[in-house]
Amino acid sequence: MRKLSFSVLMVALGGAVAITACGDDETNDNSSTSTSTTSSGSGGSTSGTGGSGGSTSGTGGGTAGSGGLPSASGFCAWGCTTAGDCCFGDTNCPGAYPSNPTCEPGGWCKGPQCSNDTECTNGGALPDFACFLIDMSAMGMGDFNACIEGCAADQDCTAVPNTTCKGVDKNGDKYCLGDVSPCTGDDDCTGIGTCNIPTGTCVCADNNQCTFQNVNFCVLP
Image 1: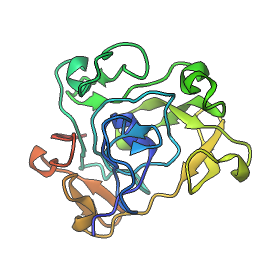
Image 2 (image 1 turned 180 degrees about the vertical axis):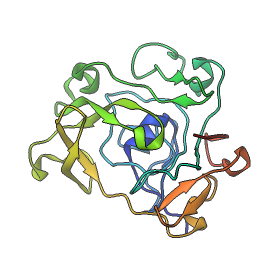
Image 3 (image 1 turned 60 degrees about the vertical axis):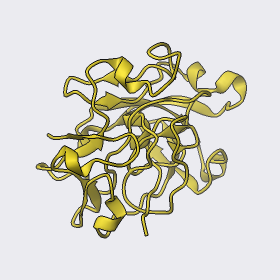
Image 4 (image 1 turned 90 degrees about the horizontal axis):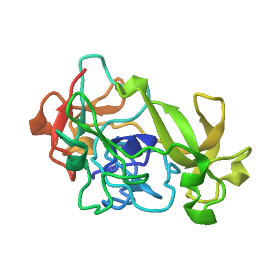
């Protein structure tokens, strides 16, 4: 059984794929970059990274999980030559958030990033959401600015089910984060690589392993 769970990585990759390893599929559509509430992406995700209102187009796939990626492993994303390749039908893209994915120097799409808290509230409909600076260096992605529900205690995490107030960004601010289960075998990673069991992450070695929705490129270290 294919298992997927939500994470900030989905948002960071901008895709519509739920990445990482395990947990039942939840939302896989192109209208939210890397798949949780308002974010999509391939690979593991942290439920709760959601978006400001609006959908975020982007790429998918990657691997999330405990311990980060082994040094010789890659993650699946969508290949590109310009930011326009990362828009996936979004007629406002490239443009302002949430239609501002980027084509990274390595030729892969990185999801839309917020620049301030106002962009994350969907006009006041999501008052507790803010723009958090997430450290994605373990994935080889550097920093990523994501719209996520902020919190002071677990009871504040109401926008996305099964999240608690345990996320802490690079500025020390707390946000709602869901559990991400590690992959336990290659079946958990179909289309986004193979399972590196010691780290519980889905990793790729070449583009042929990146065949899931909105992923076609293996980003190598």
